[in-house]
Length: 162
Image 1 (cartoon, one colour):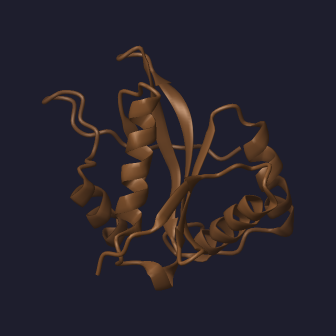
Image 2 (cartoon, rainbow, N blue to C red; image 1 turned 60 degrees about the vertical axis):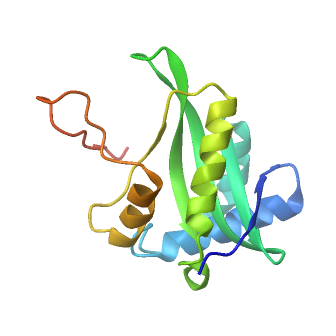
């Protein structure tokens, strides 16, 4: 059941957008496909100042009937091979009770529109292998595993916690 939502670019100087980003990020963190547990009060207190201080932050908020139901937290990056900027979606989250209504797809479309306006060469994101629901949304929208050449195989996402 697809339903239209209103998508706005977050203005982190506005108290209501700060609140919505905190609430949606905290809800996403509880999801097993997110953080799998609650964020500490310390992290939630640092979240908005940290996002405000980061020079490439781009956050889109999805609203349904005036309620914040989803967000896309993105950061601009740069592709050295294309010599153009890119957008990485760090978090794309829809509140559980609002999933299956097309809001994730609408957020992806809004991210793509913004990326095109910024002259980006691509949109990237990471997804857990076993997050089949999110993968269906992403693949249905046209995202796929990055493959740079027929002999190199697909890209993998690595990290080292510090």
